[in-house]
Image (cartoon, rainbow, N blue to C red; front, side, top):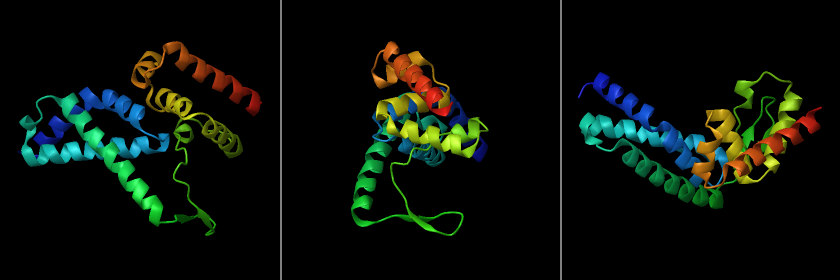
Length: 179
């Protein structure tokens, strides 16, 4: 199979499955900050499978890709827990100073979507971090991936009114804080 055929088949599967797989991963992740890594790992493995076995190997793209995602989630949390037991993470900031890295850092795409003052952005991020995991997932899916309220409700197994309530209540609270 040529590289072009692999890329074409991968793109077809990605287009057909990415929203469903993202919803699945989001609903199963323990921390919002893990979603992007697991999503990328899932599709990297899918591409490798297509390269190795050919375009026709994947008969049911959604089932196959979700099975990969399920494996990646289990693998990620297993490795993270073992890693956390043995390694203390430190990182170096722009000024060259060391600081402790926290695994639960909330990685929001607000920095990509809006051009705002850094202090306001940091305040908003910290506030969203303080919210429950389910509220952080609602924000992540709604703002980072433009997933509809009904799709979010379905993927997180909560009612649409619960999604709206979490989203709009938190937005109103942020408006008050950032005034």
